[in-house]
Image (cartoon, one colour):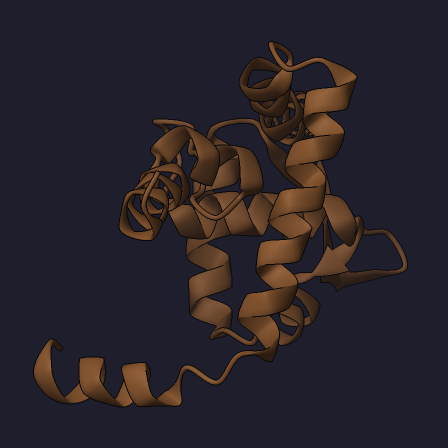
Amino acid sequence: MANLELLDLLSQLTENSKIKYATGKEKWFNSLMDRAAVTMLKTVFDHEGATNSELSNILDIRPSSVSNSIKTLERLNLICRVVQDYDKRIIKIYTTDRGKKEIIQMGSIPSNLAKKIFDFLDNQEKKQLERILSKLLTNIEKEDFSMYENYIDKNIK
């Protein structure tokens, strides 16, 4: 097989949406939530009990954007806001059981896709593929592609 044919196959593989989903390079979203809401749900899950202000700092977004995502997630019963007894001005945000289930389900998607993609290979084929891909990656990392990148930047983009 010629080098250009191999490059074309590799390109097809890396552009395949199933591969992108499995590696997390492309996000999968619940049809009820937009990208911001999914990011917020994951952040609340990782920082249970954070305040609106803390989430704003963690994500480096405006507090109003946090509020919008929180309202969406609360309507979907994925998070809840809890007013603190010691200071009614402080509202902490937590994922609900339903929100936790959603996060766990999202997390299982990549491993399930990887299983479907690679399970038809036996262990020897997987090791061989790993060796070849690692070798390609190492070579790509050490090569100087600036001449090609400059050409592409000037002539194609």
